[in-house]
Length: 321
Ligand SMILES: Cc1cc2nc3c(=O)[nH]c(=O)nc-3n(C[C@H](O)[C@H](O)[C@H](O)COP(=O)(O)OP(=O)(O)OC[C@H]3O[C@@H](n4cnc5c(N)ncnc54)[C@H](O)[C@@H]3O)c2cc1C
Ligand code: FES
Image 1: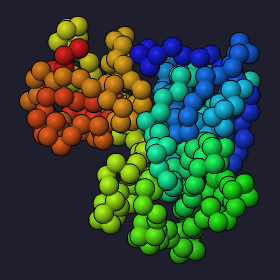
Image 2: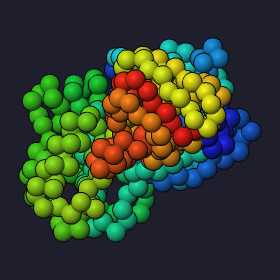
Image 3: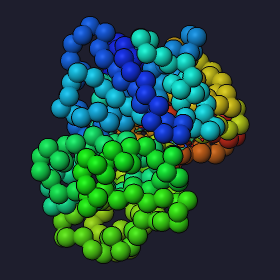
């Protein structure tokens, strides 16, 4: 598999955290230390579901300098294609699993004079490790964290207790309490960097508000927990290997190609890292680009496709694989 060398781990703790959210602790099977990572990093967790391998990205939330274990928190999504259901329903303490080495596509910019963190729901996870690092390095930061209801908000009380109410503010939709994005953006010292992770609508809204308020684009950072969307089944021809691959309703192109025994590189499986970019040789139909990696021009050209999240509708799609 082309996400790099995997680390065999044991699940040493499974802890219910909030409504439909569980935390998982992984320790190396050989007892050695886990590789260091920096706040914002994620791993790919491989799940062996009766011979069917599922692979999902999860942000690391344990302290980055603690190599004794990795911890992730997983939301059991309502319309799961299987990964978050597997983690919630099948994974038990003592189980053996495999995880990738960490990759960081959501690095803090250490040049920032201040770090303004905006989280929605399960989008809190990358910020938990980031805040540990900011706090240890003495960096100036502030978290604004929106939850739908108090029982769905993971780690609200812990974070306020750890960093203080002056640095951690919780907003609850059910109490009609929203993050005052415009006011926050207007009141930051020059050189502040903003980071947002949460539902797509929240990320889009915050980034748009930042640009409209005159923030430089390079000071605005985001991470989307994208995954492959279901859609109409279709077939692809792989020109170099001469194979025809059928992509099912719930399957991504990447998953279907892997199931046929062909290795494709990946780092995020969420349309953000660029690793699975593939050249299109014939496209008689419409590519449904769901990634945030290719530019609008690249998407319009129809010459490239990201296999992890994009789909196709039409007569023929040939890929240079
Ligand atoms: C870099 C990265 C980091 C991630 N970190 C985390 C994390 O720390 N914790 C976590 O729980 N998930 C995280 N995710 C999402 C995770 O990889 C899976 O997509 C998610 O667990 C759902 O997987 P699934 O197999 O159950 O269903 P999928 O088929 O992947 O998703 C099913 C449906 O649920 C929606 N969905 C996917 N993720 C979410 C979500 N987080 N909230 C609401 N709806 C969602 C999708 O739009 C889709 O329609 C991350 C994703 C990426 C790319
Ligand atoms: S694996 Fe990262 S964009 Fe596809």
